[in-house]
Amino acid sequence: MISTLDLHHCTKIEAKKLLDHTLENLSSEISELVIIHGYQGGQVIKDFVLTYRHHKISRVIKSINPGQTSYLIKSKK
Image (cartoon, rainbow, N blue to C red; front, side, top):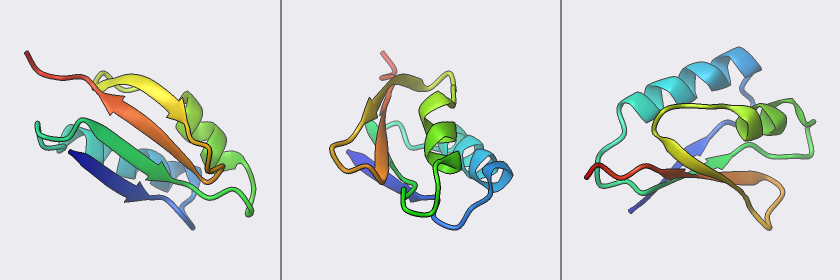
């Protein structure tokens, strides 16, 4: 299952809080989290999302769409 998180209009601090909260409370059914960060308003959030690390993320994937990035979520085995 795929989930989406929109970080448009967030500051870097707000984005970190939302990502932390979302990943800590993510359902075990979710295998991918698509982050919508935009790109026309600047690179700060996009760059942050690309370098953000969390123990539940197994892989960061840049999308063909420059306004979004996907996180593949580690499966619980």
